[in-house]
Image (cartoon, rainbow, N blue to C red; front, side):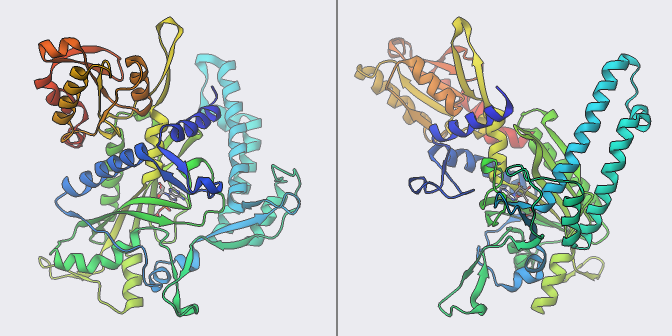
Length: 513
Ligand code: GAP
């Protein structure tokens, strides 16, 4: 199966097993908006709990908040989103399709990089063990020619971006001969700006003064609440504020399922520190966040840092943690050193004093801030795309299993009476269920053969199936089946809780951080 096909199968699986549905599907859905079903919401809540506890319980100096989605419109002027949260758009006049001009240029640059990599691979095959990649890249005429082309376009692109020069964006697209993938033509409109914020009317006045925005990031709720939390919580710098909540962006190109949505959820933490110490904290949070990801056991090789050359309007350093999705390495989380940009601007526009008084040194300053920001939905996709496995079994059979990290699994235990027609078995199974349900998310299933029920639980990623059979009535033991190894073991009912807990308790994950 190609990665593309695998991705399509994953999307279908998400729908079939109640993880994710297109929003308002009975009306044919709404582009780039999705609903989480009965399994999806549990997995999503577990991801959020892992993040929330790691931030607020494991760090004495991080507290949480839950700010409103609606915020005073001046918030978005201070944050720079009204002026600068734009995508450069271009339309092809023949296909009538709309594209992000920067994406067209970046894809073009990506293709040049691919050509260079192919040359390098050819060289590697030709020279075998004696191959020196650095020397090859510095001397091979084909690579050098492509590199010169890359540098020229890249430099023009960077300069155009810095100057917000949209005419130059278009010129680059024309000079590079970039064609519309659908019509195949170069019949482009001019490039223009498109603000990504959704706006709506607040109250009944219905004029311009009542226009407000749906927040495009949760971070600003933290900045405007900073002084309240600092004072009421008697917080000392350095300290952090964490928040999980919805964010909204009118994405121009919304694709790849829940990777890029118009309504999504973010988990953001703003860490306030003394100016001059921000690079130390930036490094600290890069390491901490990578550790949080790797702790899930989804393969260290599937993550990488990508340090930004081009910085957002508020940052003096920025880095992404990228994950290897089925469509390649892509941003999963951003770590930004935001300086005093946000607090400074809110201070100016609101006229409120947001300075910190350091009781130890007697200094006053506007704190600097290091942010960690991850999309819940993107994290969900990370977990699911890594978990989805089709396994060949002995005897030519196959099974689909979601190898979700056990503490995140939507259902932890399925309790299954061997036969639904024997009340002694169903009664005993319900007893076992009542014993476990206060500690674990459980499912009780009695329909179909045991084999089919195991397959259904594999397909939603349930780490344990507990089967009650006739022997259970005599010896007080049940059969515990492990999702990953499919091994079955007789376990006394009295030991069940401890056995399951050792594998599925979220605290075990937190202890390793
Ligand atoms: N406060 C900083 C901020 O919002 P960002 O890089 O624009 O930075 C942070 O977004 C994270 O939010 C991303 O790394 C990604 O995980 C998630 N995210 C951003 N836009 C998204 C979208 N349209 N759909 C799903 N997740 C998104």
